[in-house]
Image (cartoon, rainbow, N blue to C red; front, side):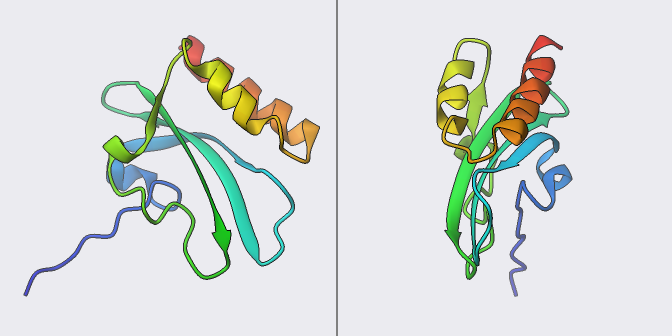
Length: 107
């Protein structure tokens, strides 16, 4: 019998060789989720990001089962992430998220 491994970068980043840099709830949860997260690959130091949203039934980031499903993040495409999080309903949380990401990009 084949055993299926379930990997989720949001709940078990270490299983994918990742560590969480920052995550952000884009709006107040109401039986749903709208998240964006940034991870650092511990072996290479590369950063990745992804966004996921849905109702309360699916698990956040359940379809992100390998690194190739995540978007690489660098100084060159940081503005793409910044534009994405611009619609976050909390400017304070958005600013803190972006500050953590900028710090990770400088390392």
